[in-house]
Image (cartoon, rainbow, N blue to C red; front, side, top):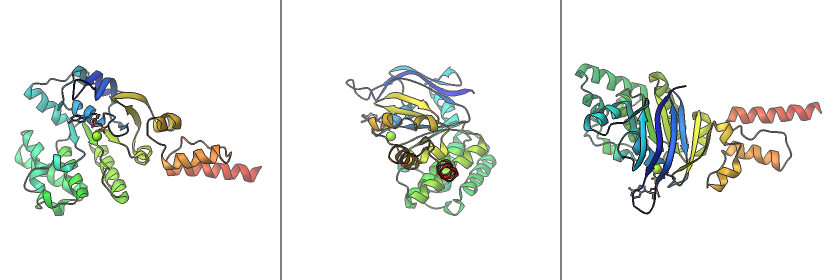
Length: 284
Ligand SMILES: Nc1ncnc2c1ncn2[C@@H]1O[C@H](COP(=O)(O)OP(=O)(O)O)[C@@H](O)[C@H]1O
Ligand SMILES: [Mg+2]
């Protein structure tokens, strides 16, 4: 596995008294989906603003492909064409008159030929199912539509890494799974590494390969969803919880004495656990 992005001893504070990020060393693996899990104020957004050079560390470093990032104008431009960020609030992202203009902005800035920009933008709108929005003013879109347009505007640059800050916040349940499926599909096609933050724990088991749990600007623990969700006490202590399905399996194990593994947190995993139990009971 190759590390694509890395922080080393990253420390940052918005004020002198308090650090939003403290001595944080993380490695993001190329090609994986890494989820940063943490309660509000844990430092997720602050970390992300460092990963594409919007904020500069007070101490420590951010490295892309093993090289410390350069904060010169051209260094940052280059970095941001490879490491794209989709902000939590699409109104912080969208500013052009029309959807088409907004999506093409980043790709135009790469200095690509006009035909190439047009082909990328039209292809991406098609893939994301927003072709019919092309001439709409961005301010007239729904929240979910704005999210798609923001994502498209980053993906047309064909970045190596996409950072998604709370991609599902503010969406209804159907919107959440639609958007997450879409993100995964498009990123898989372009082989884009995904780093996302969320406090929506039920989203994680289905979409993340690796989880970093943060609290108060520090890394609490990291691991696969299975490893993380086998530690309910740790999560609860830090104002987080298990995914619903794991929680149900935990109750079946602890209250009802069933032999189930509650670190399973997807529907298929939980289903297997319950079916196994039924089978064992029938055989006994
Ligand atoms: N622009 C800002 N000015 C001052 N403090 C901030 C600002 N943004 C975030 N903070 C503080 O930094 C800490 C981390 O916040 P943030 O990175 O937004 O966490 P998260 O994204 O996990 O909710 C919090 O204590 C928050 O209040
Ligand atoms: Mg945040």
